[in-house]
Image 1 (cartoon, rainbow, N blue to C red):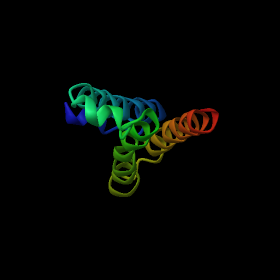
Image 2 (image 1 turned 45 degrees about the horizontal axis):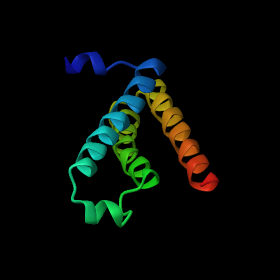
Image 3 (image 1 turned 60 degrees about the horizontal axis):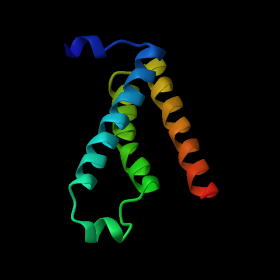
Image 4 (image 1 turned 135 degrees about the horizontal axis):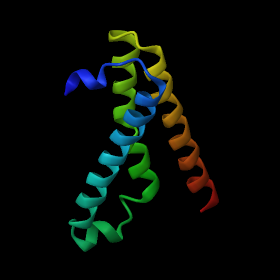
Length: 96
């Protein structure tokens, strides 16, 4: 199973770069859903913060694929998705 993720492909980078943050974002949304109302009402966990927290694993994933495995195409895919998520964050942050 792990060997399927060890291929140098731009599409694999796009998949990994979007699947990992989506999974983390979903887990964080689930955690926030079960928090008490006092914490939710304090607006500690807003959408912008959850988006930023969800792209942190991409940094470690990018480092692993670029430095350890030397897979440049996969790293480019991860980096592209990270930039797109960053642009989405900026749009949400500066339009609200």
